[in-house]
Image (cartoon, rainbow, N blue to C red; front, side):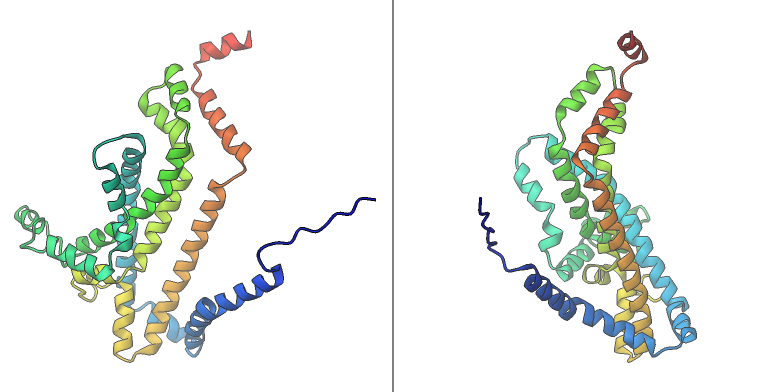
Amino acid sequence: MRVVLKQRSILPGFGLTLGFTIFYLCLVVLIPLSATFIKTMALTWHDFWRLATAARSVASYELSFGGAFVGATINLAFGLLVAWVLVRYDFPAKGLFDSLVDLPFALPTAVAGIALTTIYAPNGWLGRPLEAIGIHAAYTRLGVVIAMTFIGLPFVVRTVQPVLQDLDQELEEAAASLGAGRVQTFLRVLLPSILPAALTGFALAFARAVGEYGSVIFIAGNMPMRTEIAPLLIITKLQEYDYPAATAIAVVMLVASFVMLLGVNLLQEWSSGPPHERSNAHVTTIDALVPSTYAEEGSR
């Protein structure tokens, strides 16, 4: 009779680790967020709807979500380009440029806001030539988009970059040998592989920009109904001791953030499908590029 000894794990048991995880999440995340909902429950539905949909609140939602969407879209396009250059090309000071991508992560948001305001002010390095052609950047909605684009770029680059590094360049060579052009190779071979990661980076950049505060308030001008973002409106309501309005706006932003994070998790689950499905997808895209004459010869 063979005796099988149970291998002991280095980490503690499942029960202990699960209990500590739930306790830590409740202490740091769930209890503070629950307090916001509990505070809102003191309001009637009519009062909550009136505060959450006030004209000033709606204007701040439009700027926060609209500016975040525009900034994330810009980062989606240029983030793909930056990731492609960093992965596929070698050039002097490549490591330096690769490190600069993470600068918005390490830079304090207030410092980023002051720097952007200095550069895009009417007398700044970029603000002066823009003013000369009639484009006002600082203290406008354009300034809000600029700040949101600045802080969101690393999310797209860092989610797409590993996918590009893992892509086999032989797929591109095979597509070229079958007569596919560069545009066709990108659209039918590369894009299906990097699209899930690109969409994940877009969602992360969008979510980050929606909740951005420090780097936006300096360059926005903070004019109610025009350049006032939702996080700033919450701070303003708290300073005015209007706690019901602040919690109502906070709940709206919290629900929106939860929906966005849920979308990010679904995108990540979709992009990390079974390995055999990913390999079959590459084969399908290559087969789709085979000319009909080759297909007919193969059938013979």
